[in-house]
Image 1 (spheres, one colour):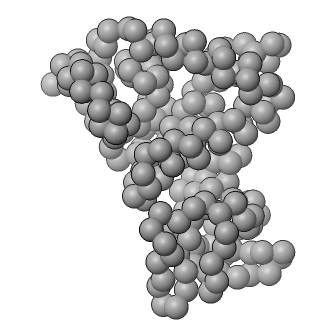
Image 2: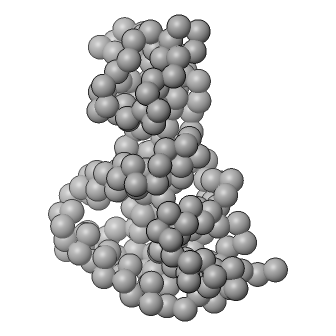
Length: 206
């Protein structure tokens, strides 16, 4: 049984067969579910699921409609990504820029950026975008998941964030040489980063 945190519904509470359709994310792996409940739950409510049914306080209260696992993707470190991390259009590949180190040291703890940024930020962000959540909210939730992952390693979030921000700025200055042909441009479109979009397209292999 895995604990999930209910996330804000994007457009009110759609109903299906007199039940509410809701979404929740398990931060640890991470994983994502959509489920049916007879009553709405508040944002941040904790539920449990075996990826088939939903439970509250040990009692079954709903059914899972959709399950996505953080283990069902590949993480590539072979391309240049202007925003350091990204995802393919189909969501099956997560990208970490080749200009970013695969891991960093925070104090005495080694942190894999493929895990912290890739699997615990870029992936849940993509899940939410694919489910029609707006980019700012998807990014906010993804940052919370990344933070919880970092803190689960026993490291200070501010120390981690300071080091990662420095790497992000350095990476952004790098000229793109090889961009993925199937990169989802949603973050760049939202940011109106037209120059970077042009650079991505000109550096994409034909």
